[in-house]
Amino acid sequence: MVNTHFLSCSSSLAFSSIVALAIAVPIQAQVPPQQTEQGQGDLRPLAQPNSLLSFQGAQRLMNEANQAIGSEQYEVAVNKLQQARKIFNQLSNFHLQLANSFSGIDSQVYEAQRSSALKSGQMRDEATYQLALVHRAQNQPELSVPLLIQVIRSQNPTSDLGKKAYQQLYELGFVESPFSPSTRTAPKPQQGSPQQDNPLPGNPQRN
Image 1: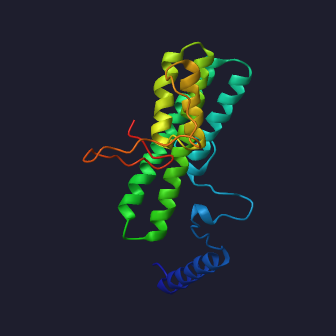
Image 2 (image 1 turned 180 degrees about the vertical axis):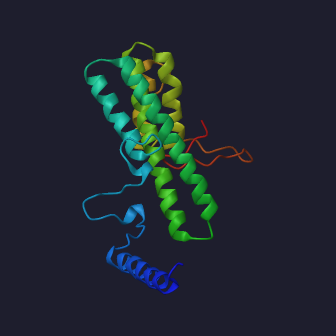
């Protein structure tokens, strides 16, 4: 016959041991990735330098393109700049969409996303301008022209990058008149003619 008193004592001792073990072993809390120990950095996947859809990842491609240009590996540079341009454009559009979604709801999120959209758009235009220069170095000016026009439309002709883009068009022979904004004023539009607002510098593009 089984001794029920013995089983009861054994069960109590086993349960006590489990409780004691649970108390002795510290429980590791699930810490959000952004709250890591000092020195570890941000461990979130899209915050890593090797992430494809990140500002850091696109900037790395830009740096690799500059190195390729320095060694006259223009095909490699074109490939890197095209990738960087695409990523920056995606980032700019995505951040702008988020900014519009939070407009009137959370001003802090709205401003942060709008700032990220403009920052990414600025870098996209830098990559676009650099790509146009590489095509010019390859003696392919027909590929440079549409890229330079995209920069001017996005940046505004009076911005530093816009002025450099127009200067390239002038040097290529696509336009006849040099542009000097300090000494030239645009003609006034005729009465009743439609007007278009200039896009913000770094304004995100659809394509």
